[in-house]
Image (cartoon, rainbow, N blue to C red; front, side, top):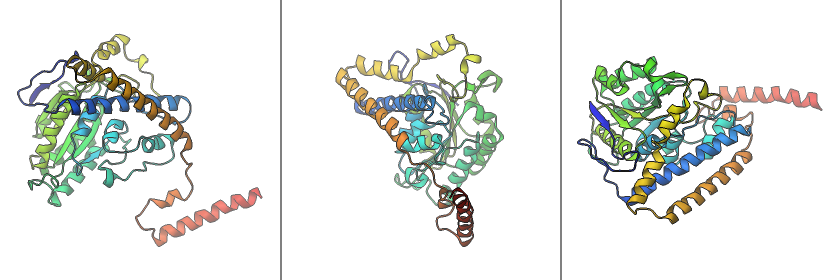
Length: 363
Protein backbone atom coordinates (compact mmCIF):
# COMPACT_ATOMS: atom_id res chain seq x y z
CA UNK A 1 0.00 0.00 0.00
CA UNK A 2 1.27 3.44 -0.91
CA UNK A 3 1.01 6.57 1.17
CA UNK A 4 -0.99 9.57 -0.05
CA UNK A 5 0.60 10.80 -3.27
CA UNK A 6 0.82 14.54 -3.90
CA UNK A 7 3.29 16.17 -6.28
CA UNK A 8 1.76 19.65 -6.50
CA UNK A 9 0.35 21.39 -3.42
CA UNK A 10 -2.78 23.57 -3.45
CA UNK A 11 -0.41 26.56 -3.36
CA UNK A 12 1.24 25.40 -6.58
CA UNK A 13 4.51 24.10 -5.11
CA UNK A 14 6.17 20.90 -6.34
CA UNK A 15 6.70 18.05 -3.88
CA UNK A 16 8.72 14.84 -4.01
CA UNK A 17 7.36 11.34 -3.44
CA UNK A 18 9.52 8.24 -2.96
CA UNK A 19 7.48 6.06 -5.33
CA UNK A 20 6.10 8.40 -7.97
CA UNK A 21 7.51 11.20 -10.06
CA UNK A 22 6.14 13.43 -12.80
CA UNK A 23 8.74 13.97 -15.50
CA UNK A 24 6.80 16.07 -18.00
CA UNK A 25 8.14 19.53 -18.83
CA UNK A 26 6.42 22.93 -18.96
CA UNK A 27 4.90 22.25 -22.39
CA UNK A 28 3.08 19.17 -21.16
CA UNK A 29 1.92 20.89 -17.97
CA UNK A 30 0.50 23.76 -20.01
CA UNK A 31 -1.25 21.21 -22.20
CA UNK A 32 -2.75 19.48 -19.16
CA UNK A 33 -3.91 22.82 -17.79
CA UNK A 34 -5.49 23.64 -21.16
CA UNK A 35 -7.38 20.32 -21.10
CA UNK A 36 -8.71 21.02 -17.62
CA UNK A 37 -9.78 24.56 -18.48
CA UNK A 38 -11.64 23.49 -21.63
CA UNK A 39 -13.26 20.53 -19.86
CA UNK A 40 -14.45 22.89 -17.11
CA UNK A 41 -15.94 25.19 -19.74
CA UNK A 42 -17.60 22.20 -21.41
CA UNK A 43 -19.13 21.26 -18.07
CA UNK A 44 -20.31 24.82 -17.34
CA UNK A 45 -21.93 25.13 -20.77
CA UNK A 46 -23.67 21.76 -20.38
CA UNK A 47 -25.06 22.78 -17.00
CA UNK A 48 -26.38 26.04 -18.47
CA UNK A 49 -27.88 24.22 -21.45
CA UNK A 50 -29.74 21.89 -19.11
CA UNK A 51 -31.07 24.84 -17.13
CA UNK A 52 -32.35 26.33 -20.39
CA UNK A 53 -34.21 23.12 -21.23
CA UNK A 54 -31.82 21.96 -23.96
CA UNK A 55 -30.69 18.83 -22.06
CA UNK A 56 -32.82 16.47 -20.04
CA UNK A 57 -30.14 15.97 -17.39
CA UNK A 58 -26.48 16.68 -16.72
CA UNK A 59 -23.93 15.15 -14.34
CA UNK A 60 -21.42 17.92 -13.47
CA UNK A 61 -17.73 17.18 -12.95
CA UNK A 62 -16.52 20.55 -11.64
CA UNK A 63 -13.72 19.94 -9.13
CA UNK A 64 -12.79 16.56 -10.62
CA UNK A 65 -10.96 17.83 -13.72
CA UNK A 66 -7.49 16.83 -12.51
CA UNK A 67 -8.56 13.29 -11.67
CA UNK A 68 -10.14 12.78 -15.07
CA UNK A 69 -7.65 14.55 -17.32
CA UNK A 70 -4.67 13.12 -15.42
CA UNK A 71 -6.03 9.60 -15.83
CA UNK A 72 -7.09 10.21 -19.43
CA UNK A 73 -3.76 11.57 -20.61
CA UNK A 74 -1.85 8.68 -19.02
CA UNK A 75 -3.51 6.25 -21.46
CA UNK A 76 -1.98 4.85 -24.63
CA UNK A 77 -3.93 4.57 -27.87
CA UNK A 78 -4.60 0.82 -27.46
CA UNK A 79 -5.89 1.10 -23.88
CA UNK A 80 -9.62 0.94 -23.26
CA UNK A 81 -11.79 2.84 -20.77
CA UNK A 82 -15.13 1.90 -19.18
CA UNK A 83 -16.69 5.11 -17.77
CA UNK A 84 -19.64 6.02 -15.59
CA UNK A 85 -21.90 8.88 -16.68
CA UNK A 86 -19.55 11.64 -15.43
CA UNK A 87 -16.25 10.96 -17.23
CA UNK A 88 -16.55 13.94 -19.57
CA UNK A 89 -12.89 14.80 -19.03
CA UNK A 90 -11.74 11.30 -19.96
CA UNK A 91 -14.02 11.40 -23.02
CA UNK A 92 -12.32 14.67 -24.00
CA UNK A 93 -8.89 13.05 -23.70
CA UNK A 94 -10.01 10.13 -25.86
CA UNK A 95 -11.13 12.43 -28.65
CA UNK A 96 -14.89 12.08 -28.20
CA UNK A 97 -16.64 15.19 -29.53
CA UNK A 98 -18.41 16.95 -26.63
CA UNK A 99 -21.50 17.24 -28.81
CA UNK A 100 -21.68 13.45 -28.91
CA UNK A 101 -21.74 13.45 -25.10
CA UNK A 102 -24.39 16.18 -25.06
CA UNK A 103 -26.58 14.29 -27.55
CA UNK A 104 -26.79 11.49 -25.00
CA UNK A 105 -28.03 13.86 -22.28
CA UNK A 106 -30.38 15.52 -24.77
CA UNK A 107 -32.04 12.14 -25.20
CA UNK A 108 -31.25 11.76 -28.89
CA UNK A 109 -29.18 8.58 -28.65
CA UNK A 110 -27.46 6.21 -26.26
CA UNK A 111 -23.98 7.37 -27.26
CA UNK A 112 -22.93 7.91 -30.85
CA UNK A 113 -19.15 7.46 -30.76
CA UNK A 114 -17.36 4.25 -31.76
CA UNK A 115 -15.99 2.64 -28.56
CA UNK A 116 -13.38 0.65 -30.50
CA UNK A 117 -12.09 3.66 -32.41
CA UNK A 118 -11.91 5.89 -29.32
CA UNK A 119 -10.87 3.25 -26.79
CA UNK A 120 -13.69 4.61 -24.68
CA UNK A 121 -16.83 2.62 -23.98
CA UNK A 122 -20.33 4.08 -23.89
CA UNK A 123 -21.49 5.76 -20.67
CA UNK A 124 -22.87 3.44 -17.98
CA UNK A 125 -25.70 4.65 -15.76
CA UNK A 126 -26.09 1.44 -13.72
CA UNK A 127 -23.88 2.09 -10.71
CA UNK A 128 -20.78 -0.12 -10.74
CA UNK A 129 -21.80 -2.33 -13.67
CA UNK A 130 -18.90 -1.09 -15.82
CA UNK A 131 -16.37 -2.60 -13.40
CA UNK A 132 -17.42 -6.10 -14.44
CA UNK A 133 -17.48 -5.07 -18.11
CA UNK A 134 -13.92 -3.77 -17.76
CA UNK A 135 -12.63 -6.94 -16.13
CA UNK A 136 -14.27 -9.08 -18.79
CA UNK A 137 -12.69 -6.98 -21.52
CA UNK A 138 -9.32 -7.16 -19.74
CA UNK A 139 -9.53 -10.94 -19.57
CA UNK A 140 -10.20 -10.92 -23.30
CA UNK A 141 -7.11 -8.77 -23.82
CA UNK A 142 -5.11 -11.41 -21.97
CA UNK A 143 -6.42 -14.16 -24.21
CA UNK A 144 -5.62 -12.10 -27.28
CA UNK A 145 -1.98 -12.11 -26.20
CA UNK A 146 -1.86 -8.33 -25.76
CA UNK A 147 -0.32 -8.33 -22.27
CA UNK A 148 3.29 -8.75 -21.24
CA UNK A 149 4.77 -8.98 -24.74
CA UNK A 150 7.15 -6.06 -24.26
CA UNK A 151 5.72 -4.30 -27.31
CA UNK A 152 4.65 -0.79 -26.19
CA UNK A 153 2.27 -0.53 -29.13
CA UNK A 154 0.53 -3.84 -28.35
CA UNK A 155 0.45 -4.36 -24.60
CA UNK A 156 -2.93 -3.10 -23.39
CA UNK A 157 -4.46 -1.97 -20.13
CA UNK A 158 -8.12 -1.39 -19.24
CA UNK A 159 -9.53 1.24 -16.87
CA UNK A 160 -12.80 1.12 -14.96
CA UNK A 161 -13.95 4.47 -13.58
CA UNK A 162 -16.43 4.73 -10.72
CA UNK A 163 -17.23 6.87 -7.70
CA UNK A 164 -16.94 6.17 -4.00
CA UNK A 165 -20.58 5.13 -3.76
CA UNK A 166 -20.05 2.38 -6.31
CA UNK A 167 -17.54 0.65 -4.02
CA UNK A 168 -20.54 -0.45 -1.94
CA UNK A 169 -22.06 -2.21 -4.94
CA UNK A 170 -21.76 -5.95 -5.38
CA UNK A 171 -20.71 -5.59 -9.02
CA UNK A 172 -17.55 -3.69 -8.09
CA UNK A 173 -16.53 -6.18 -5.42
CA UNK A 174 -17.20 -9.09 -7.78
CA UNK A 175 -15.03 -7.33 -10.35
CA UNK A 176 -12.25 -7.11 -7.74
CA UNK A 177 -12.51 -10.87 -7.15
CA UNK A 178 -12.31 -11.78 -10.84
CA UNK A 179 -9.53 -9.29 -11.56
CA UNK A 180 -7.40 -10.65 -8.72
CA UNK A 181 -8.10 -14.29 -9.58
CA UNK A 182 -7.15 -13.90 -13.23
CA UNK A 183 -4.47 -11.23 -12.79
CA UNK A 184 -6.44 -9.11 -15.26
CA UNK A 185 -4.74 -6.03 -16.75
CA UNK A 186 -7.23 -3.58 -15.27
CA UNK A 187 -6.92 -0.36 -13.27
CA UNK A 188 -9.84 0.43 -10.99
CA UNK A 189 -9.97 4.23 -10.82
CA UNK A 190 -12.22 5.43 -8.00
CA UNK A 191 -12.97 9.15 -7.86
CA UNK A 192 -13.72 9.56 -4.19
CA UNK A 193 -15.65 12.81 -4.33
CA UNK A 194 -16.76 12.43 -0.68
CA UNK A 195 -20.48 12.04 -1.39
CA UNK A 196 -22.48 9.14 -2.87
CA UNK A 197 -25.30 11.51 -3.83
CA UNK A 198 -26.31 12.52 -0.27
CA UNK A 199 -24.42 9.84 1.70
CA UNK A 200 -21.04 10.99 3.10
CA UNK A 201 -17.96 8.80 2.84
CA UNK A 202 -17.83 8.02 6.55
CA UNK A 203 -21.12 6.14 6.23
CA UNK A 204 -19.79 4.07 3.36
CA UNK A 205 -16.46 2.77 4.65
CA UNK A 206 -14.63 2.28 7.95
CA UNK A 207 -11.25 2.48 6.22
CA UNK A 208 -9.80 4.52 3.33
CA UNK A 209 -11.15 3.06 0.12
CA UNK A 210 -7.76 2.28 -1.42
CA UNK A 211 -7.05 -0.15 1.43
CA UNK A 212 -9.89 -2.39 0.30
CA UNK A 213 -7.60 -3.68 -2.44
CA UNK A 214 -5.49 -5.45 0.20
CA UNK A 215 -8.35 -7.82 1.00
CA UNK A 216 -8.55 -8.88 -2.64
CA UNK A 217 -4.80 -9.33 -3.02
CA UNK A 218 -3.70 -6.46 -5.23
CA UNK A 219 -2.17 -3.01 -4.63
CA UNK A 220 -4.07 0.12 -3.72
CA UNK A 221 -2.87 3.71 -3.79
CA UNK A 222 -4.45 6.96 -2.65
CA UNK A 223 -3.62 10.01 -4.73
CA UNK A 224 -4.53 13.67 -4.42
CA UNK A 225 -7.26 13.72 -7.05
CA UNK A 226 -7.00 17.52 -7.32
CA UNK A 227 -3.33 17.23 -8.30
CA UNK A 228 -3.09 16.48 -12.01
CA UNK A 229 0.65 15.73 -11.89
CA UNK A 230 0.22 13.10 -9.18
CA UNK A 231 -2.86 11.62 -10.82
CA UNK A 232 -1.03 11.33 -14.12
CA UNK A 233 2.04 9.71 -12.53
CA UNK A 234 0.09 7.21 -10.41
CA UNK A 235 -2.22 6.21 -13.27
CA UNK A 236 0.68 5.89 -15.70
CA UNK A 237 2.47 3.52 -13.30
CA UNK A 238 -0.65 1.41 -12.67
CA UNK A 239 -1.38 1.16 -16.40
CA UNK A 240 2.17 0.06 -17.14
CA UNK A 241 2.02 -2.54 -14.39
CA UNK A 242 -1.17 -3.91 -15.94
CA UNK A 243 0.31 -3.96 -19.46
CA UNK A 244 3.33 -5.91 -18.23
CA UNK A 245 1.13 -8.59 -16.69
CA UNK A 246 1.34 -7.39 -13.10
CA UNK A 247 -2.43 -7.46 -12.62
CA UNK A 248 -4.94 -5.00 -11.20
CA UNK A 249 -4.48 -1.85 -9.13
CA UNK A 250 -7.03 0.22 -7.24
CA UNK A 251 -6.47 3.97 -7.40
CA UNK A 252 -8.43 6.16 -5.00
CA UNK A 253 -8.35 9.71 -6.35
CA UNK A 254 -9.23 11.76 -3.28
CA UNK A 255 -11.19 14.71 -4.64
CA UNK A 256 -14.46 16.59 -4.13
CA UNK A 257 -17.67 17.06 -6.07
CA UNK A 258 -17.97 20.85 -6.07
CA UNK A 259 -21.36 20.86 -7.75
CA UNK A 260 -24.50 18.78 -7.55
CA UNK A 261 -24.59 15.04 -8.15
CA UNK A 262 -26.75 15.81 -11.17
CA UNK A 263 -28.85 18.80 -12.17
CA UNK A 264 -31.82 17.19 -10.36
CA UNK A 265 -29.93 17.26 -7.05
CA UNK A 266 -29.79 20.01 -4.41
CA UNK A 267 -26.56 19.51 -2.41
CA UNK A 268 -27.39 22.38 -0.03
CA UNK A 269 -29.84 20.00 1.65
CA UNK A 270 -27.05 17.77 2.95
CA UNK A 271 -23.72 19.67 2.62
CA UNK A 272 -22.45 22.61 4.62
CA UNK A 273 -21.26 25.67 2.69
CA UNK A 274 -18.09 25.74 4.84
CA UNK A 275 -17.13 22.35 3.44
CA UNK A 276 -17.49 23.55 -0.13
CA UNK A 277 -15.47 26.69 0.61
CA UNK A 278 -12.71 24.57 2.14
CA UNK A 279 -12.41 22.49 -1.02
CA UNK A 280 -12.44 25.55 -3.26
CA UNK A 281 -9.00 26.33 -1.82
CA UNK A 282 -7.82 23.02 -3.33
CA UNK A 283 -9.10 23.83 -6.82
CA UNK A 284 -7.23 21.65 -9.36
CA UNK A 285 -6.92 24.43 -11.94
CA UNK A 286 -5.81 27.14 -9.50
CA UNK A 287 -2.80 25.19 -8.25
CA UNK A 288 -1.49 24.52 -11.78
CA UNK A 289 -1.99 28.16 -12.75
CA UNK A 290 -0.07 29.23 -9.63
CA UNK A 291 2.75 26.85 -10.51
CA UNK A 292 2.94 28.03 -14.12
CA UNK A 293 2.90 31.73 -13.21
CA UNK A 294 5.33 31.45 -10.30
CA UNK A 295 7.92 29.67 -12.43
CA UNK A 296 7.44 31.80 -15.54
CA UNK A 297 6.16 28.84 -17.57
CA UNK A 298 3.04 30.63 -18.85
CA UNK A 299 2.40 34.27 -19.71
CA UNK A 300 -0.73 36.38 -19.64
CA UNK A 301 -0.97 35.79 -23.39
CA UNK A 302 -1.24 32.04 -22.82
CA UNK A 303 -4.18 32.47 -20.44
CA UNK A 304 -5.84 35.05 -22.72
CA UNK A 305 -5.59 32.74 -25.73
CA UNK A 306 -6.95 29.87 -23.66
CA UNK A 307 -9.86 32.04 -22.57
CA UNK A 308 -10.63 32.79 -26.21
CA UNK A 309 -10.49 29.07 -27.03
CA UNK A 310 -12.90 28.36 -24.18
CA UNK A 311 -15.30 31.02 -25.45
CA UNK A 312 -15.16 29.49 -28.92
CA UNK A 313 -15.86 26.05 -27.48
CA UNK A 314 -18.83 27.39 -25.56
CA UNK A 315 -20.23 29.03 -28.68
CA UNK A 316 -19.81 25.82 -30.66
CA UNK A 317 -21.57 23.76 -28.01
CA UNK A 318 -24.51 26.15 -27.65
CA UNK A 319 -25.06 26.30 -31.39
CA UNK A 320 -24.35 22.62 -31.93
CA UNK A 321 -26.82 21.32 -29.37
CA UNK A 322 -29.66 23.24 -30.95
CA UNK A 323 -28.73 21.85 -34.36
CA UNK A 324 -28.65 18.21 -33.31
CA UNK A 325 -31.05 16.19 -35.42
CA UNK A 326 -34.02 14.62 -33.68
CA UNK A 327 -34.01 10.82 -33.65
CA UNK A 328 -36.03 8.87 -36.20
CA UNK A 329 -38.01 5.66 -35.54
CA UNK A 330 -35.58 3.67 -37.71
CA UNK A 331 -32.75 4.36 -35.26
CA UNK A 332 -34.34 1.70 -33.06
CA UNK A 333 -33.13 -0.84 -35.60
CA UNK A 334 -30.01 0.72 -37.11
CA UNK A 335 -27.49 -0.15 -34.39
CA UNK A 336 -28.70 -3.47 -33.02
CA UNK A 337 -26.44 -5.61 -35.22
CA UNK A 338 -23.58 -4.87 -37.60
CA UNK A 339 -25.71 -6.43 -40.37
CA UNK A 340 -29.47 -6.38 -40.09
CA UNK A 341 -31.00 -9.85 -39.70
CA UNK A 342 -34.15 -11.11 -41.41
CA UNK A 343 -35.97 -11.10 -38.09
CA UNK A 344 -34.96 -7.51 -37.34
CA UNK A 345 -35.91 -6.42 -40.87
CA UNK A 346 -39.35 -7.96 -40.36
CA UNK A 347 -39.76 -6.09 -37.08
CA UNK A 348 -38.71 -2.85 -38.77
CA UNK A 349 -41.20 -3.35 -41.61
CA UNK A 350 -43.97 -4.16 -39.16
CA UNK A 351 -43.18 -1.01 -37.22
CA UNK A 352 -43.26 1.03 -40.44
CA UNK A 353 -46.69 -0.38 -41.18
CA UNK A 354 -47.82 0.52 -37.67
CA UNK A 355 -46.60 4.10 -38.04
CA UNK A 356 -48.34 4.37 -41.40
CA UNK A 357 -51.71 3.82 -39.71
CA UNK A 358 -51.19 7.08 -37.85
CA UNK A 359 -50.31 8.90 -41.05
CA UNK A 360 -53.53 7.61 -42.65
CA UNK A 361 -55.61 8.69 -39.66
CA UNK A 362 -54.15 12.19 -39.88
CA UNK A 363 -55.11 12.49 -43.54
